[in-house]
Length: 169
Image 1 (tube, rainbow, N blue to C red):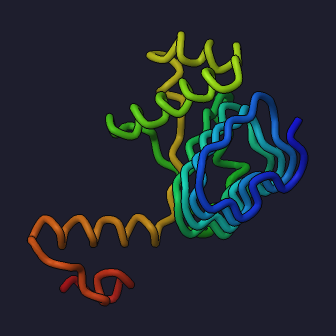
Image 2: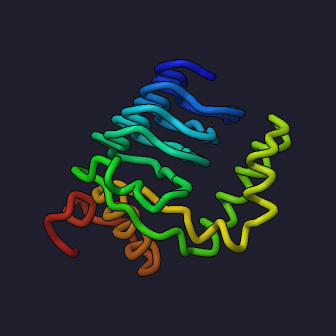
């Protein structure tokens, strides 16, 4: 419904798509927060920032080259991992309360912006549906965020070695 290469290189803002995007949705996304009801092949390829919520199926090669940002996919059939390029990312359960809240809030904004009855059904059945969401997180990005959090908890800035993963202090 939105065509191919939508939000290529997007740097900021929000986008809500009622329907399915074509191929290469949010390629090189570096800051936009987007909600879409499905994507074709190569979604979130080379993504460096932002948040993307996919409320349906993805095509193959999802998250190839993804080095930043986070994607959340409703894995309706339990087979998403087979369509995700795991070269740089991990697929995890969505189980952190603050992230569950973020995803739900983005879906609510999607409903407000689009009138999507499909998304409204997801929110209506949230207790059951939320357990089927997966989080796609670049490994290096996660390491940097964890190094920053550890350092800030200790009242200091992270070292270069901590950020690049070559040392602990």
